[in-house]
Amino acid sequence: MDILKVILTSLLSAAALFLIAKIMGHKQIAQLDFFDYITGITIGSIAAELATELEKPLKPLIAMVVYGGISVGLSLLSSKFPRTRKYINGTPTILMNDGKLYRQNLKKAKLDLSEFLVLCREQGYFDLSDIGTAIFEHNGKLSVLPRSTARPATPADHGLTPPADPIYTELIMDGRVLEGNLKRMGLGLTWLDRQLKAQGYKSAKEVFLGVADGAENVTFYGMT
Image (cartoon, rainbow, N blue to C red; front, side, top):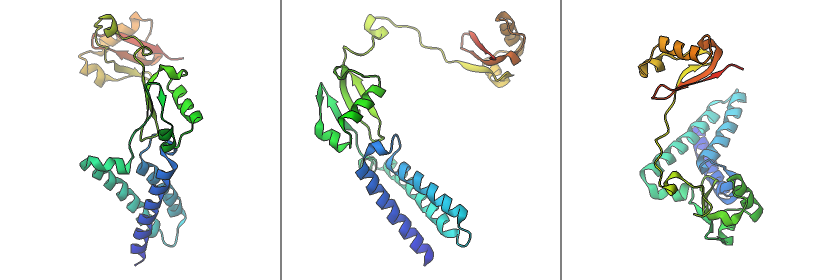
């Protein structure tokens, strides 16, 4: 009977926390989904109680398992039934579009103008006229689409097609040679030693980080 009570009270507290988090708004959770937020703080609290509960440690342990199960269950539910995501995590809210601020949507997102301006500045937009669309995401972050006249120019704007950026592989980290990465690139210790000497290093122990691209162009960062 005690175990059943623990399970029921855990479910009740999870539901209460969910409703409170919804009322407080997305800015409160800051990049976490609602249930990631409430299970994180609650499991931490229960774990602290479990560490000090010497007489009946089973109760807080069961509560922790229930909260973990709720989080996993809701994750599976939202994955299998996408329509449930808007009820569990909420939906994005358009705060600004085509030079127009939506006052009601700001209220819905629990944001005042000062907080909205802070979020814009954090994204690098100090002039609102540069913003085409601003969307408040369900994880508490602001996504901004700049106006076409305010976005940085790209090579495509000038009719250019630059080569793809190379992917670098770590060959040396903290003065230690990563021989597995060398072999995967078809290179050897003799080749690496030659590259070190060419750049003024006596051995790999003098290198904090060494990386190479697919064309065998190597960059070394020495110890400081």
